[in-house]
Length: 209
Ligand SMILES: [Mg+2]
Image (cartoon, rainbow, N blue to C red; front, top):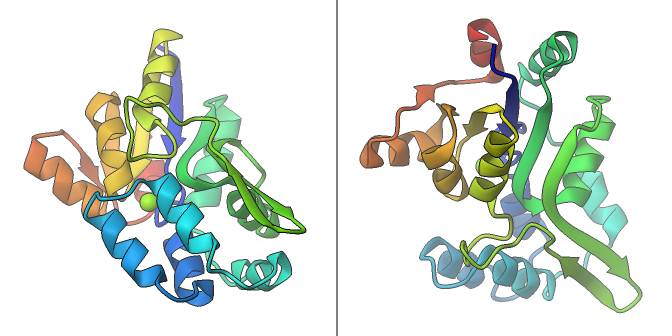
C-alpha cells in the first residue's frame, strides 16, 4: 500500500477561528482593516499583509499570547492526530500564517507539535521581524508555497491527504490526492471542478480513514 501523509491548514481548520485575522482584529492599529481588504482582493501578498499590519501593533507578545489561550481546537483534531500516531501516518501543518502561534496554541492544548511549515516571527526590542522560509516566487501572493510542499511529499512516494478551509489552500487542493474542504475552500473547489470531500469537523475525517 502507498504511504500516506496528512497535510493540514491551521487557521480555521485545526482551530475553530482564523487566528491571524483575529490577531489583526484585536491588536491591529490604524489602517489594519484596509490592509486586510487589499489582501482579500489579491492586491498585496500574505507577507506584505503580515508586515504592514504588525507594524501597527502596539501589543506585546504576552498580550497576544493571553488571547491565544482562548482559541479552541477543532473538536476532532486530537482524535485524528492520535489515530495518525497509532497508524504511523505522518501529520504536518502547512500554514500561510506564523509558526509562533501555531506552536503556542497546540502546546497550550497539549496537542503535541507536529511538523509545521509556516512563517516565522521574532520579537525584538525594536519590533517584529519576519522570515518566510517556505515562500516561493511561483506563488507570489502566499507566504508558504503549499502546493510545492504537497508535490515534494508526492515525489517522495506519499499519497497526500490535504485538509483546508480557505483561499490560501486552493493551489494545494489542486495537486493533493485526497481533499477535505470546508467554507471558502469547499466553494472554490466546486467552482474549479476540484474533487473535494466536505467536512464539518475532523471527527468526520477520522471516521473515514
Ligand atoms: Mg485556513
